[in-house]
Length: 255
Ligand code: 13P
Image 1 (cartoon, rainbow, N blue to C red):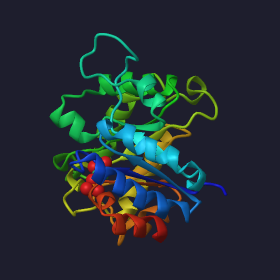
Image 2: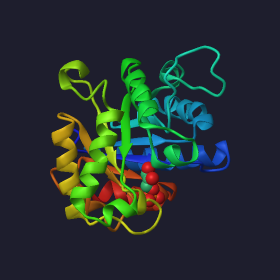
Image 3: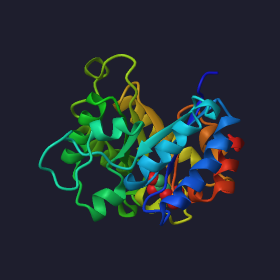
Image 4: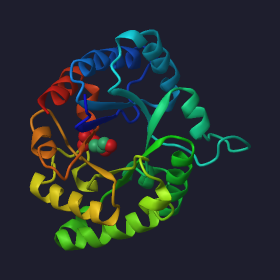
């Protein structure tokens, strides 16, 4: 069945143990199997990717092809003296197919710049991993209106996707995902108006032709459909609600 929408779960620094991660992953896998038209990408903390990946393999027969493993970050080098680095090759070896890059929390707490985002996105793509590049404006920008938000996002997109935004250079058929996550909407319960998010998604698509656009920021089972019913929005990047198996199941089933 053709995939219509993408739901990506960003677990952030949760849960606290590998056992809990495996339990949550199993519950989500079961939920995803019954909705083959939705691609479900689960992004656990990197240290748990190995154990959830094993779980995925041992249940291979029962997993539908719509389910995929993602990482929350990827370094741009594959191997070498890069303390703490986890590059595309390591991730691919663990069965990872997607990587979130440039999340606003990485930018804020880990000092990531647009230039670093660009290197990571390029390395991921070259290493066979689909980048989910995050962009989003802070509240002081959005307060000035949608046009100001577009100007802010245009800079992030131009710098962060410099090496890969051109569809010819990107190569036909290579997937590229941009997640629009207004910073003020993340974890605040203050989700963006779906109509505004759709306008911004359309804008992102004019800047990055061929890219899919997800919306993220306080998405839950009650509001997800308002985003995914828009043609401009290809799915959602979900934080808090992806940690509750029931809520996440409802999100997958609701769309
Ligand atoms: P919340 O869904 O918790 O607002 O988080 C969104 C997010 O940052 C996903 O990457």
